[in-house]
Amino acid sequence: MSSSENRDKLIRIASRLFRSKGYDGVGLKEILVAAELPKGSLYYHFPGGKVELADAATRWAGDWVARMLGQCFDVATSFEEGGVKACEALAAAAEHNDSVPACPVVSILQAAPSEPALRKTAEEIYDTWTAGLVGQAKRFGVADAQQAALSLHMRLQGAWIIAYAQQSAAPFHHLAAELRQTLPD
Image 1 (cartoon, rainbow, N blue to C red):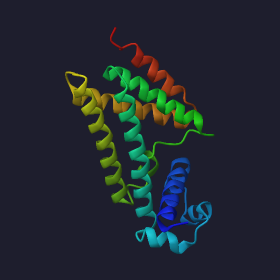
Image 2: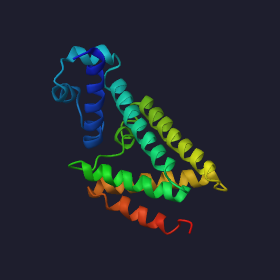
Image 3: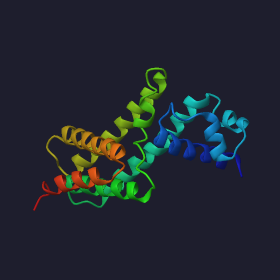
Image 4: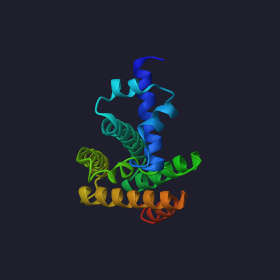
């Protein structure tokens, strides 16, 4: 396996573990065992250790969410429909797994008091998601694009937290049903 493949493997596995157990619930040894890699490979790719790996893993998963949101809105005919499609995509992703993983950003936020760099990472990723939604709202001519984007982002995040707590995609389906009621005729 190439060096870049090892790095990618560490990122993917760390993301999965952080999302299922939280930052503090996962040790480096567990990540290395799951990745079947020696300790040296972790520090070769992530000299900053767990914090640097968590940053990379969260950004990787955050990019996936940003791309998914963009794809949902790109095929929508309205901002509201894009929101429905985003809920459906998140529900499908949740139903595809054995369990509903936490939002990648939420999974590192609990470490923010002791690891301020991770709070900054979370802020940057959330800002990226909101900015993408603002762009979509503007594209659809939404009057207050910033407010609409922030409101949808908060609603999606709330549904994700409840879906994680319940280990069910039902909150995404509930939000999709609410958003369908606002679809233009």
